[in-house]
Length: 398
Image (cartoon, rainbow, N blue to C red; front, side, top):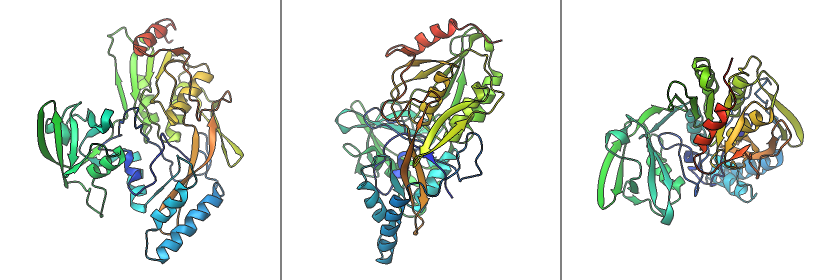
């Protein structure tokens, strides 16, 4: 069975929607498109930080989708598409339907592995698709592709004016089984200023790196921990980083642009900084549940959390918990405001319907969905500089 999930953005209800998440890594789309990065694990017995599945959650909607899928399959049509049509008429922008293959691919991505070319893209003005980040050492980087390059076409099909979801699906090779497997090729038409060129890349299996640690401000400055997504292992990686950190300068926890992830990993990350206690509450069809941090977190090292409008979902859950519990000062601009809970249910044809069944709140009872987290210090420009100033006033860890 499958457990509750938190997602970072609305997904288009269509075949290939699951592939919006990764283009050889987390798809770092801009404000015009947003991104998402979130799903749940297979359910286990209830434990702190891991809600158990309520199999009755969203049952009427699931039953309608299941009936549509079964009827379509009986007529020799796509059950997933029929279910998607039912879900799209619900008006819930967060619900979606995956084919069995898409959901399997999605779960693999949340395990931290994926097949791609090491490239992030975003939509810009006029429908242009541009490169926003390039993975060092990946196929795209080795070919000379750089941030800011235009992506004009994928395998001869124009990218301009197309939804980012469609462009991503082409880049990943969404199609018949094996079409996007490691070793398969994809041809990109690119532009840089007046220059136009084409390159053929071979997809490869890559591993995501969702936690990075550095000390950009010198030996006496803070340690900066950047979390781009809450894939499996994120909480453990943050714990290792905190244990190794020089406590003199404190910590900057950078959640800017973090589109969400596994809620279990967000709770595990909260447990690094909290000594037990409430992280969030949520409801499933009116039944109230709670998420708790594990004990023995580091409560002494000074902590500032950086957020912005791209901070979504599980990242909002974490920042709201640390703010409400008085553990961190939150600096930046208001977050996205995605606080709904989705429950995945398997349909008769093996496809998976994900439907909204509830919403979560911060420890102080604040709703997040549609409102987001308001920072303690609102800063639009030079937020990191202001965060360092705040951190310097918090003293040093013992």
